[in-house]
Image (tube, rainbow, N blue to C red; front, side, top):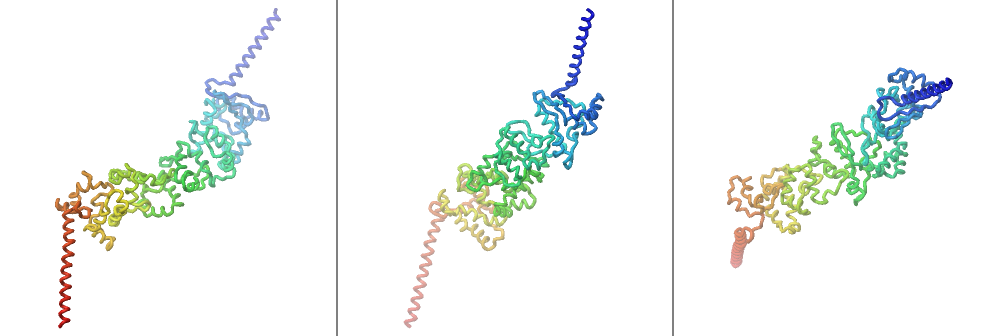
Length: 555
């Protein structure tokens, strides 16, 4: 009986020991209060084991988390470990670090500026024992750790953007790696190609031909002309922006369809342009933008247009826009303000696009023009014959309309349309409008100024003095037409004019039985009487001379 009791005690003792061992192991694998991922220890036995005891064991024996005295402790553990970080999502991340790869990386001892482990892994988080990893999954862990890169690389990377089908951002380590960090030069020589292609394929973003892309990167052809689809692979994604020092932000997203349908795109009748034709032989990653504001960037980029459109560019330099820009007005219009950048369309198709382009800066004038006889015909009826802004002001060589020379030339400007018999016949408008103006007192005086003193200030009425400039109304408009306000119009120059003064004007019509019949009859009377009178007198003089000569001969 005594022997049996001893056997029972021995078994119970073994069970207790086993339970204690299990509890001890559990305590090693789980620390109270830990949240998220778990580090599963499975150390391998190797030549590092003895060194680990020398460097790491004293830190563990202190009982409180302690900072490692150097990178040596980090290297001894992470260079020879089968441990993994297990996330609640079920994903695992090995903690093994290839020291040889680390040394050859952009941050390794072989680089110009080597980094220590704690330079990236903050000492407050990376103590021995390590703080628990709180990330729920591997991606959350990668995003959090990638934020460490911002300590040195504060300028946002071009690829740090939301993907088109995912709200997860592309972070530094996705392209450059973590312990095997690739330099920009290594990315350009092809080592980063696989990461680009794989990532874009996973999120369903259409890339240029991966084979061609790999060839471009491998051969270092980023500084040469590349296919437009390669550039659009990034720049066609929505939400892409470029920020400046002053807080300005512009969109760098290019509408693929709008570009292809533009005058520079693939679907036009001209030669298709490549992105590099305008933007130069850009390298990737792109160089930093030197402009400090969005407007400065626009003015700098606008110089690209001069390469192909040199004549128009030179005309613009002499225009009111070019003069304003030279005087320091950076808001003065440049090429892209009128024509657009990647969505450049024919500027006069449809024709009303011309006036809408000017509206972007001259909205108040456009509103008056839209209600004029010209604007209503153009904007409401799409009439291709009526005057638009450029018909009066010019296109690239826009002159100052407030000068005396512009005033002196204004009748000829109106004559381009109103003296054109074929054009006026379409709308039953007489070309006598211009001819009668030139024939009357006002027109003759202005014409004399133009021919004899082109630099003098004309002191007589020109077309827009009576009809208006941008707010020209139909002459028979009951409220704003010139007929309804003729006396007030005349009184602008003739303040003492009465109703008889304005009624005496025959308008721009040649006198006829329909228009000013009394004047017509008087003109007709004199047209008959004067020739007959002068003819009769001439006949009498001629016959008298004949008679006198005849008498003298007879004598």
